[in-house]
Image (cartoon, rainbow, N blue to C red; front, side, top):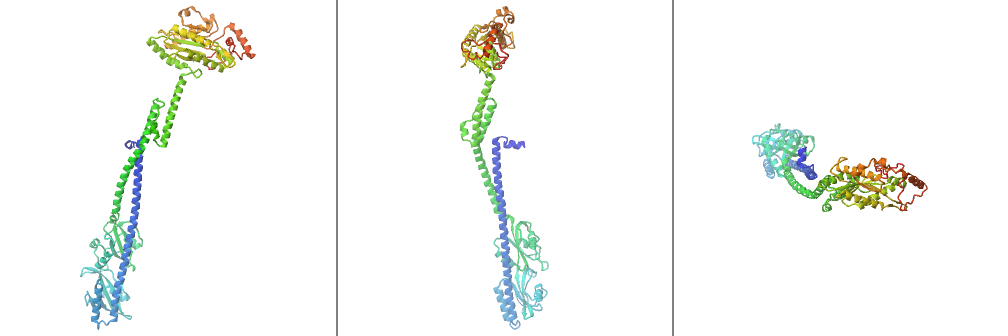
Length: 616
């Protein structure tokens, strides 16, 4: 099966189109040829059956009329013998016999035999011979009726005859018989004269099916014997039909083994059977020529139709190929691939709709992939880069900077007392404050810098081509800008401050598994110091500070190294309690007097509005 599929390339759309179009045309052509062949065969079979039947019936009527006419001739002669005195009018009887033979050249001989069977007068026969032993004489003598004999072979002359015998009566007294012989050759010649086509073979059989006459080919192989043997039996299918009295149209094998169509007809007296046959090949010779012509025409139509079908489907194949290539491009990651509109415009309606839908889906896929890619690296709340992007791409940027020998800084930024904002104003307001901080950060940095949300209320700025001093200046600018850009809504204003830890890249890695993790950890330590030095300040990484400072949790409690646990000092606890009381009295609804939010208010443990790392 596989070699056939490969041969016709039916595994592809083009191959299937070509194969099935060709197969359909061949099937339709064969169906037409076979249908027409069957129809023509049946028509010719019916026509041949009708023609042969008409032929044998015409010949049967002709023979019957001919026999009756010859009987009339013999009957008239018998009447002369009845009215004349044969002994006295010998000359007149002879003259009448000669006139009859001259008028009817079909008679071979005419004779008169007396009651004893002795031939008394004869023209063309022998006088004095006896016909008493002849079957026809016996039949006429015994029945006193006219009689037509079977085929009689006259061996002395080498021919066969049919005898028409009529009784000569004087009242009730039998006087003799007038017998007239007709040669078989004459009968055959007469039948052929009324035969429409020379290719039709006609046979005369007796009522038992033995041959009386035949064509030259049959006669040459069919010796006709005496009246008792009569000849060769016509042992074919048509004889069976004749004896059974049924006509059939189907072909059969004749005496010579040739396939023929045949028909039969009985003479009215049912003494003879006429059979007409025509060779099967002659009937269908024009038909075979027609079949060959139809096959040739079908082959031409097949080739032309195939070429036309290929031409009609070529545009569809081209468009489907572009669709296939388009899906291949999309699979390879080239989203947004479009099919040429000029190809779509000339395509069928179904393929045009399919191609247009492909272009629409391809464009939607491209935008969706872009959105997904952005969602994978963009923080959905603040719309800056997320921690994943920072850790993946930021590390690559740091490595590139290290190879190039250029400095870069990490700014770790944490919003001061952010938990109190969530507690006092709610998480939705806290989310908007984070977006506000992110907007300020984007406005402060260069386009080459990376701003990312690290977690909760913490942000990271990766400043490229920036040494530690420049990083401190950038951090101070950010701190001041945020301090001077409070978050405002219609009914309140929230002042915001941030603490920032700054560090520069170094070839010596102390923490983490890569340069970026090392810088973030060192920046986190600097941020830790900024928190415990009072917040709202910038602290750069300093070896001297790290060596001089002891544990800041003991020196200045209030900031936990666990990010998001920005605790208030004890001195601010009272302010927090006061703020809480004012909140319960409903007096904190409008904080637009320019003062900072109640940073001393201690949170009750609510999570960040974004669900960050604890998010205070």
